[in-house]
Length: 178
Image 1 (tube, rainbow, N blue to C red):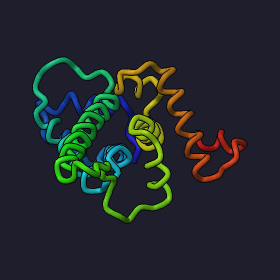
Image 2 (cartoon, one colour):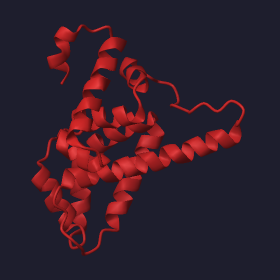
Image 3 (cartoon, rainbow, N blue to C red):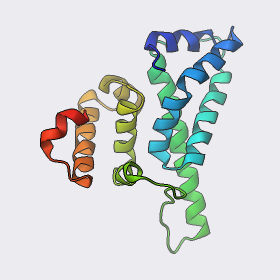
């Protein structure tokens, strides 16, 4: 179910006064938020936790400034929580086996897309996921990541190039992947 950015912003601004707004937002946005989180953390369990934590933080919204860009706001929360989760996982892995520290990247069940996405940097994965899975524009992603729109676009194109190479896809199909 695709929802408008205006609807997302409206629901976010209603949360302090209307408990049903959070439930409606959850029903509409849990899947795209999960998709972005999964592409960042590469673990189903961690992605589910990221989305739950994101919605828990939304429950704490109180009266304050109005949220202007609801989509960017939601995915900023997902990004921050996913990065926090990755830092925590890295610390735990490093403590368990400091001699052979290798980032834990999931628990099996990977398909070709998962393997291809794992070849991208964390920044590239989040940009690809925010654009393709969540439908954010380059300028919205730039707001979420604190980068310029040009940088986001360059990283997205670079990531697409890596994915094309992984799948051995010729550049003539490039327009179809955007």
